Image: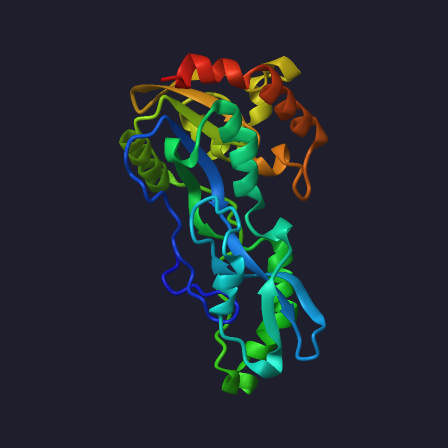
Length: 269
């Protein structure tokens, strides 16, 4: 993680990882961390940016709690306007979808799971990069240095989500978690982690038939036998932003037809 990366208006990027390091029933591997998003209003109260990343999420797979309090602590020069919380769909949607569409069907709470992202910090997607370049970076230039605003330096979404060193770190977290089940969220954890231990490189490789979705598979990871459950990312399951209706439907069927069976067989007790 870049040591000095900062968001627009100066909040330092934080590493976001599992805090409770005791053994858990389930280990969940996601992609990269999210951010707290604010709506940026100009001095006249008009919207400049509907959802601008301004701080690291306070916990991994954050559910959007206390967004207003987090944003209120961020200083913005009055001549540049104000920050208010962005819409609910911008703060914590994946965390809420994880709870309702993954954990609850499996009979789990947050206390039962160890959460991990391959990239354990926020990254900027192309839309955020464009918003910052068009609206924030011009006011952070030296000509307006009197505002005291630093350049935004949060890294973009990477092309590679894990190298050998990061895979070793993830494996050590799995060892500490001692899970009964490892859940992979979407294609990227399969490609950048699981494919080094099995032949599959994406979710579709586990079967094209709808009935193939959401089955538990055995896998040896560095010599240790684990049960692995490949599922869609919460964005797909929850129909958030751009998503596939096919995968959303398959996950809904998994909730209705298979989740309870997995709960009984692997997680009960």
